[in-house]
Amino acid sequence: MQYSTHILAFFIYLLCVASIGAFMRDYYWRDYSPGEIPYDAIEVSNDGKYIGQVYVNGGLIPAMIYPHLGYSVAELHGKQVIKENIKILCCPDHSKLYWGYVDFKQPSSAQGGLMKNAILGGFHKDVGKVFIGKVHHEGEWKVAKVISIENIYNGLIVWKNSDGSPLNFKQFYMLKYNSSTFGGSIVTCDDISR
Ligand SMILES: *[C@@H]1O[C@H](CO)[C@@H](O)[C@H](O)[C@H]1NC(C)=O
Image 1 (cartoon, rainbow, N blue to C red):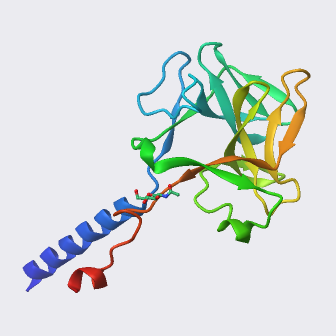
Image 2 (spheres, rainbow, N blue to C red; image 1 turned 60 degrees about the vertical axis):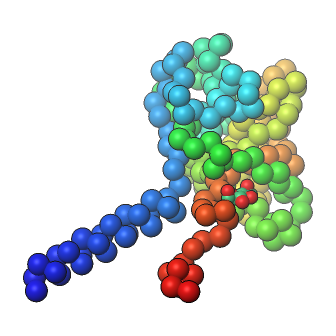
């Protein structure tokens, strides 16, 4: 009696581990050592630049890693150049990630819920959670923080190369995670028993 209860508990445990595995978003921030690019790091746009995360001016925010230049750039109260304590975004299955085009001038609901699937990029005390966006500006793709559409300061905030001042974009690409499995539909126990 007790023996079979243990076996049952074990199988329930396996089932839980398997289902958590299927729905858990599988990406993470590794410590970045200048010059060493992890095999699973995410490139911004096949351009040798990567997605970083830094703590600067009271915010934990996304940054752009320039490995060939030996520094990272982020925007918070202007352009910030950071050379240490940088994290790099990694994911074992890059096909799960996509850059979704968003337009913050249009209602979120009209675009299927704009913030849906967005990958968390950090946190700032004034604006809350921040996400990861990119836009083509001044001849390159720039990655920076996205302030959520619910916030009055919403948008993707990048730096200007000329004077370092911030620039707010309402139309840009946001990094998202596609957690659908089995070709987009979720198989339930009900489906299996049929
Ligand atoms: C998410 O992945 C599924 C399964 O691979 C695919 O059918 C679907 O088109 C993807 N959705 C997006 C928004 O990329």
